[in-house]
Each structure stands twice: as C-alpha cells, then as structure tokens.
Image (tube, rainbow, N blue to C red; front, side, top):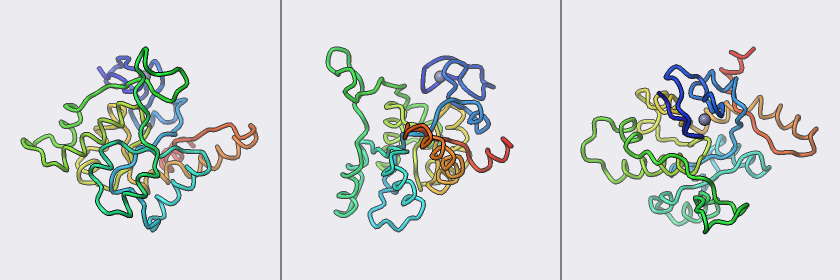
Length: 220
Ligand SMILES: [Zn+2]
C-alpha cells in the first residue's frame, strides 16, 4: 500500500494518483491530478546568488510574478557557506510553521503537518550507507522538512544524492517530487504559459500547471 504524502490515505501499490486527493505517484498521474505545482523547496545548491543559472532565473521570475512560491528549509542556512549566498538565501521565504492547535491562528500561514519520514528517505537516498556524513544528514533533513510542510516539488542540482540510480523515480513512487531546475522549467513551461493566459482571463486568479513536455506529448 502507498500512503499519500499529501492526505495520508492508503492507496494500491499500482495507483498512479491518490484515490482520495489525486496527488500523483507517477509521471502519468500528472494528467489526472487537480493539483498544480505551487510551492518549491530549493536545495542549498540552488541559491542563485549570482543569477547566472537561466533555469533558476526563470523559476525566480515566475515566483516574482506570483505563479510559484520558493521556500527554504531551516537546514539551508545552517549548511550554506559564503556571505553573498547567505544573504540571498535570507531573502527566500522560510518554510511555513506547522499548525498547532491552540497556538496557531486560523489563516495565520501555518500548515497542517505532513508525514515525518526520515527513515524512509534515508532508505531511498542512502540505502547502503551505515554512517551518514553531515552532508548526507542535511540532505535527508532537507527533504524531510519539505515533505512535512507539504511542499510540492524539491529542486536540486545534487543529482547523485537525489536523482541518480533510480532515486528520483523511487521518491516519485511515494509522491515526493524532486527535479533539477532545468527539468522543472521544462515541466512547467508550455502549460505554465497556457495557465497564465487562462488565469489572466480569470482576473489574475493564481494557478499553475504541472506537466512535463514529455507528459504533454503523452497527453496529446
Ligand atoms: Zn492523497
């Protein structure tokens, strides 16, 4: 059974999307979901201090236009070196707080907690490592926090720790979406523009789409 990271409902192992909330567990599932990619968590290597990465520039432009929200986990500032990069990172919105009954205010920005699954993440990211390095621990903490605050996509350039050797697919299988900046820009580009046009017709109502070009081709 697959426990949905968005709503906690159990799903069949073969499910493409969550039967309850429609969150995708497969690339094909993006055709059937009502979710849009809105909240990104960026990895330490994606702090775009010099603005020389065209894909990160594009994501930041979309964020500035209000189509996406870029967030950072608290571990990012702990991990980051270099004053310029740290200053840039401080401009990025921190993850929202987790809603606590009797403490959080309704509408105050705190979010309901998603699953807290460090052991599952360790098993996917570093299945054979007995003694994690500090960097590996930070990787797990980054993704753990992303899942717990209900982020939509984790953006990283660290392919060996998050993407390669089937890690990206294994994470997607449990509903955790990790992309390199260039993959995410491709994912959003065409339908994103379409969404912008659609949204403009709808009086600037916010909206995002979430198909890859590949998916888009599959759709058609
Ligand atoms: Zn669900």
